[in-house]
Image (cartoon, rainbow, N blue to C red):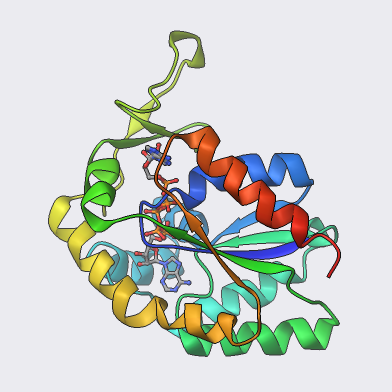
Length: 213
Ligand code: AP5
């Protein structure tokens, strides 16, 4: 199974990806996680990326396309993959089409998670991530259990004004991808409002219908 997860920042892509990958035996490729690791390790890429990420802007296409091109060559993804956070622009989508057709691979579907902006602000402002495992929590809706033994931090780009900028960038640069993939019959909209399990059940319904394509 090869899929793309689209949706505004904070819509729940990372949260739902963890279950999808476990249940469908595929690996997640999160460009946000790859970039944050580089920022933490202070690599050259990380230093460049941080300038864009902290302002809520997109990292340039060329950088992102090179990351995905080298990632897709890894044997980890032979059984499939879930792309979380890529593509985010039309040029990225076109580059991905080119890479996949060269590799003889097809996409099963593109999930589009839909959540209203005001709910997103509420979700992101109380999002916390565990330093050790990268697991995503919410202080009200999904708090860690005492036995989780977490070390929580708040992402640098999770301040309200940066979130608003990220939402604007999503509307102008990423949303056009819904039309792009709809024209190929690959985009499936999922209502992302509701509890975690309810949203996951909606996702599974779509994925199960797209297993054999
Ligand atoms: P990235 O890390 O990809 O961030 P994003 O797409 O903005 O998405 P988020 O990780 O913020 O949210 P999510 O949808 O995963 O939600 P989550 O599950 O955490 O990118 C970060 C930055 O990197 C970008 O801004 C850009 O600068 C750069 N970048 C990355 N890829 C790039 C690319 N391809 N091109 C250019 N630049 C790129 O959930 C959010 C919160 O809500 C959590 O607390 C969770 O517990 C809670 N929650 C989830 N589901 C529910 C629910 N059903 N009910 C209640 N709460 C819920």
